[in-house]
Image (cartoon, rainbow, N blue to C red; front, side, top):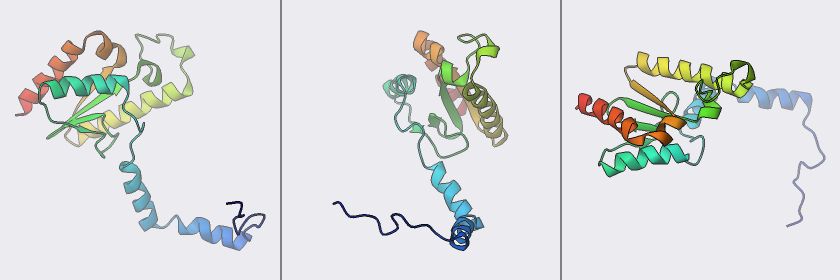
Length: 156
C-alpha cells in the first residue's frame, strides 16, 4: 500500500517505554502468556518419527491426542495418563548416535536437561512417560509399538 506506519521514525519516551514494559509483567498477563504458550505446538509440523508412531497407533485403533497442552507437550498422549515422546537423536543428544559428549552442542545439552525435568515432572504428576529415540522408531517400530500397547493394556 506504500503507507508508512504512524510511528515510523518516531520513538517512545523513556517514561512510555517503562510503562509499556511493566504493563506486560502483571500477574494476569503472565498467566495469560503461559496459558497461551501451552497451546502452541512446537514444532508446528509433526516429525517423521512422530508420524510413524501415530500411524502405528491408528492402525490398531488406539485413540491418542497430539501435543497435549501439559508439561513438555508430549508428542502423543493416550488417556488417561500415558505421555509418549519421540526424541530426535541429534536434537536430544542420543548417546548411542552421538557418544562424544565433548562434541555436544549447547542446544543438545539444554534438551537433555529439559527432557529430564519434563519426564520427572510428569511422573510426579502421576503420568506414565515413554521416550523413544529416533533410531529406535526407525529401526524397530513393531517393538516400540509393542511397548506402547503393553502399557495401554495395563491401563485399561
